[in-house]
Length: 250
Image (cartoon, rainbow, N blue to C red; front, side, top):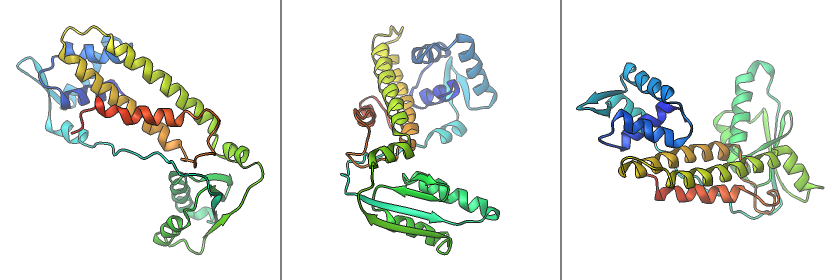
């Protein structure tokens, strides 16, 4: 998260904060140079997102509208593997590249992986969801959807190769380690005002939530039993679910 966004978020939830308070809160998030923090605050003055009133920084209406979007909580897939597969095959010509890209983006969002160029698979029964989408886009003649239940040779190895699950597992591991270290460090940080502790915990929760959701967007949410050994995705999700005890949602 950029310094500007940190400042805007803090001012949305915190009243009666000075420039020095903001510098201290941002510095508690990491090793941000004071010159960069000053530059970010100045930039927000120039863009008319904040103003100073009686020595305190105030968020203006334009910036407040930008910041009002809250993230919805995302679910964790606890579904067991039933050997169901959905396969999507499509033949969309090069001149319709935009349509092809939209379809690929949708399939990725649904947790499909690319087996080869125009063949995408997902180890779950989502055939009706895909059919609804292609009907809305009027692609029935260019996209075929198949559903089947069967054991695939070396299925775990195949699945991990298609979705690069070992790499994702390592990213989750780093997220868990970094998040634990950040919260431990923040709890021992010495603020000159006691009220800055809660504001800082709230900000760190928002930063952590956004980082988790970035990883979650890459996660195909495979059924239980198909994840790599020592799966860190569940640990990361548990941290994400606990953020509400710090996070003030407006």
